[in-house]
Length: 306
Image (tube, rainbow, N blue to C red; front, side):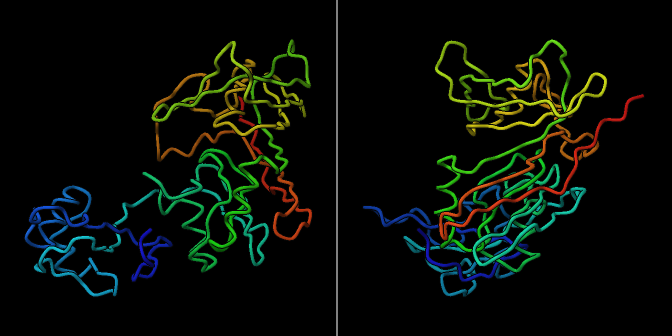
């Protein structure tokens, strides 16, 4: 683990770091720290201009010039430049805040954590800046396209018990969705299947004949023409479980760009949200034993029919 960063957070993000290798058996391959930084970060950051601006620092916050002799096992800290991101529509609402927890009502299209093309437009970055909590982090995650209740911990010291609670599937989760309507589908129904999600592949898939590792209770709330609103109670937490299960039942969720068909990725297009909402989250607090319940204030929008 690296030592504590000498740089303060920027845009709600901790600084990045790189470390020179441990001393090898022969002479170093680089004469100066500049040469090593060029080798380590050839395309990620503009090394020369950042050195000139004093944006690389050592463990004590002193700026590297780049002309220093190469040093093995040495940390270099810096902040990356962030790309401009289109603002996600909708407000990040704070449902609850106490010493340990912050519970938010996440809008559609907002990523839970900063990653890839979604950094400043993420729950973690926005909430850290809004609440001035630099260690705020998620206890669990919601898909970027899913709206609703999301639990975060205020400090690192609280993260483990709450993350472990979610890993052990202790919380009771209730979702709502607007999806296709099948009059011939008996409801309520329970969908059980074996779901596999491979790294680097956009979609998950069901594997027939293997023992179920995913289970969802599907209940009808309301039908309107060719669509219906459903209550979903997942008893497991596989990636894309609800989206895949409803698609497999022949009632794909409205606005889903992956199931049953993968559509072109339009990262800046916010016109058609996934009609999936994390409505309610209930659990016994692993720290103080109190019963907790949080409810989303959002409502799913029925699609406009011509």
